[in-house]
Picture 1 (cartoon, rainbow, N blue to C red):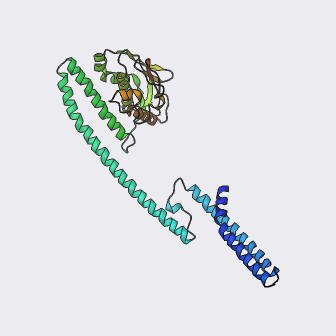
Picture 2: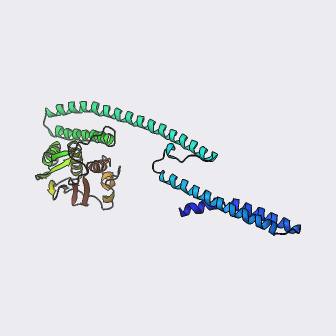
Picture 3: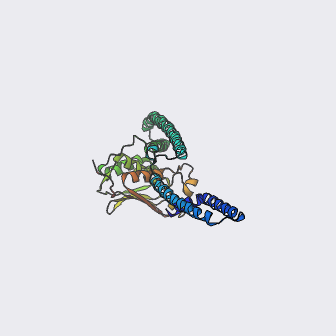
Length: 328
């Protein structure tokens, strides 16, 4: 409010200067003609006092309007504005109405474009699943190093399709989070089973320990997070072991003995599109997987953190004890 009074009085300094100049002109004129100065000073003082009262009243009125406008800054609509008092106020209201109409048109057009994009990619994802399923059935009929390698690559394609769908549905109107008490161990076994061929092909050891945890979560979205984290662990673990175990009170750990993450990259691994040193060496990295995982975990009320040391491996911790919603 102090800043408001400074700016308001500063804006009226020209009027004050003009009034003082008029009084000075009258005083000089009276002095040149030898007239008594009291004849001009007395009415000038009266006018100055009246002008001061007027300024204070107008200032108080302007301060009340400023306070109202400041309160409406966060959620501004034309109907919430104070009533116009001058032609200038009406002009501003007209400008605000036009800007609101333009913004509403842009929001509507953007919403339509987004809905059309989601509809297109949803249709694309359903269509692409048909040839993927056909190729998987074909590969199941033979067992060879080539077929196992192709099956692993096919699984990677499926995960990329699921990543696209998760990205589109993340903040969409149709996104549904069904929170209920869920056993964690079946989800872990199902996620690991999808990567069994890759574990065998690359001769990586799996240390899957029972967690005996029941967590409040959305089974479908948590399964997506688990698969993304396992995919990352496999991608950056050329040899060694991938371990899944629980820490108190309800923290799931996914640890690997892979190449690790550089210290300068670690604070930014959850940023969208950030791939870091490992991602620049692996051209397939998109930089979206961990970002999606954090966004989904945040929506589910879970926490996710990463600790890593180059050359010694990485540990991802999912804190499943955080509950921000009631179970169904």
